[in-house]
Length: 227
Image (cartoon, rainbow, N blue to C red; front, side, top):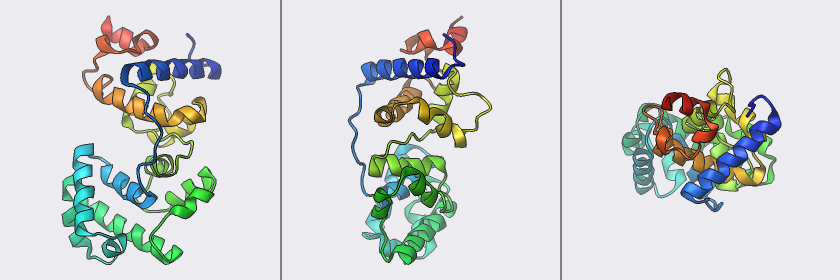
């Protein structure tokens, strides 16, 4: 099937969603917590595993029962709490600066006001923070507010390139602009989670298990590898 037509790419992504949902089960949309929690957790998840970032977030909340307490704490104390997430010297001052800025601008540490904004407006606000890139901002909008956006992480970008729906010259930071419009808004939550699950289990960066892949019939990369 030709990959150069928009309709063809949408049809392919529709088949991808159906096959992944059959393989893993379609996840029901839900909110993952309040937006500040999701924002901090997503920052902690940058360049580390879910296990490490989850442990760091849990420890951070044990150390600081409120976000105001974290905003008023020394950076070194925050750094000690999140060490398991890696890059703590970079993440700790960013997290504290974000918390302080929200409080200074809004009078309290909360992001509920973003729910009333258009996705593009909320996206611009979040990406105005140091350390908040496209994926982090879109994860907050998707998981905290259920906005119909499509974050792209390294797993999703890798699979999309192997399937031929994401050109190799599109940088990861802009992949959401290319892929999001090709996926129906109602399907973006499920597609995001299912592609990540598939990237972790089957379509790995190294040693992908193409012989077990439910997408092999539509993946020229996988068929070449099998030969």
